[in-house]
Amino acid sequence: MLNQLSFQKFKRTLNELKEDSPKETQEFKKLSPAEKRAVKDVFIMINNIKGDDLIRKIDGIVKQVAKKRNVKVSNIEDYFDNEIIN
Image: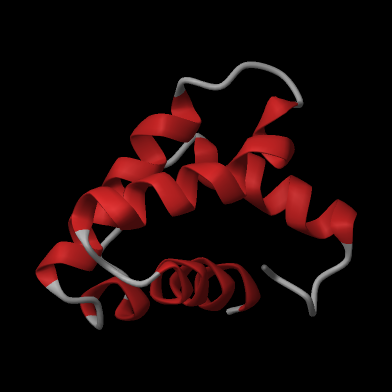
């Protein structure tokens, strides 16, 4: 996930996003209803993580939510990639 970003930028941006919930951005509007629910679930779960555990747990969270909402992991990852890069 996020292969194009440096680790530090990814960590900083993810922590900033953690404080936010998904906004009605162009990228968010492109998602299907199930994908939107999945992204919201990811935000809920990452907001419950304390300290530096976020980086270690983000892939597991995305996989868990994708399975629960029956969406592709790659679609959720692509959403976060596009939000962070843009």
